[in-house]
Length: 324
Image (cartoon, rainbow, N blue to C red; front, side, top):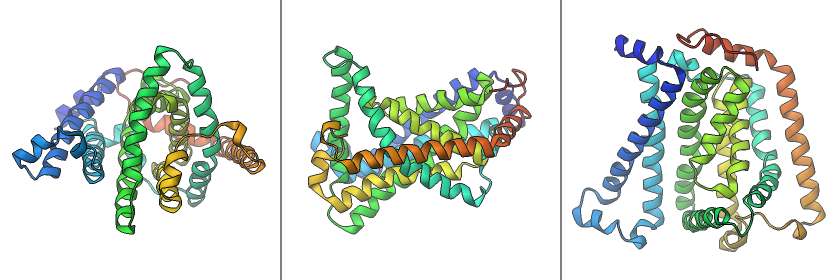
């Protein structure tokens, strides 16, 4: 095992990213098999029926398949990569307990990011040039995602609500953060030699894998915020909390507002429909978000150095990282 670990650690960081991608894709393929077996119990007729859109789009089946993707594809993929390369090579997954105030900052960032994400969604869609073939392609993906999201968020009992919250909020917060901020971001930072560039490139990949390109920019910004929470706190847990709050907010809103909200509330509303309260919330939210990030950047500048040192000290190839 030490020989294998040494081989992985002495790879160029670019090759480590390729290996992480291969491991993750292989585990996602395994997750598809696990998900189908989980749904059907291994029954051949049941597996054949999974080809039917009605069966595949059943909410319970969607949740099971999503759970398999998260647990087997993302979480197991991240931990398998960590086992091969060594957790110390990834900063130990930054699993230490964070400073108490970072829990509060993570919650504030997640809540106050909402109006910025709403605004950048519009910019994102406009940048794809309405009427172009690229816009039409992205729009078709958004329509498919909207149908899937409505199926998932249409529930009528607290038990169903808890199941959706577990599948859509808790598991992605844990599994996606361990893969992207725990495994990919350290390798990306080492590969680029710059903390900030590594954070944003990781966030771009994080956004791209969701295959919803009207929301590429806001999701990338959200991923970058999670990345900075890891760097500023020296721990992955504030990012996990922020991710959970962001996803749980949609589930709880759907739970409280009901089916009517699902028809119109999932997509950003035109700015022309905004009341004074919407503008006030947007200005206040973005202002607080920028203030918090500026505060963290100034008071926790040493954490960026510590993050760089933690990775640089275990780097066996590629030299020291450049200041960023």
